[in-house]
Image 1 (cartoon, rainbow, N blue to C red):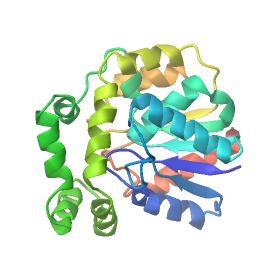
Image 2: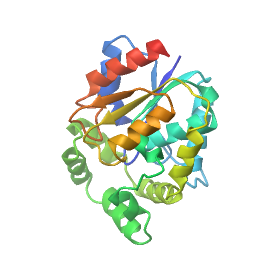
Image 3: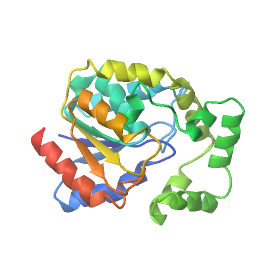
Length: 250
């Protein structure tokens, strides 16, 4: 049963390095990382980079793995995970994700996302994010809490096509798009789930919103105290233990 990890924005699969190493130390070796087009992987011809396109891309990846997948999503990878859960739950044996508050009807996009959704301002922001010397980009990611080795790999993976995908994805997901996804999740066929909630992650709504979405889905919440958006670094051991217990009970 493959254990697939999918990341978000602005990231590459390098963000899973520490967590996957912790899992390998615990005897879990059937792991695979899935890189969304534009975020560490090339985009196919005509790629429109919308929320639906990424969901369908992930559906295809899970079909290629043969289904029965234990899926783990972070950031927009969590958003894609929720999209699959609403559309093709039959492909999943289990799922785990952070950012559950994204799917709450009262969720308001964070400031950076609202800027990306704004014409001209969004273009200026992504040009700044993907431009400039690679070392300077890496330093920015380090300041956000990424280890130096991961920050360097993520910085190397960003380019103008990443920026185009960021704008298209966030603009396609302007509300009520995620609220509509949340409504679909309330009636989806349940699969064993797990919600990670990092107490210092301020991008994905409130703790109350995340807890409410988790309750809709019948998923327990793992609270990661004093950890932020990139909890999978300092929290690698705690997350690995939680995932192993989750998979054993699925």
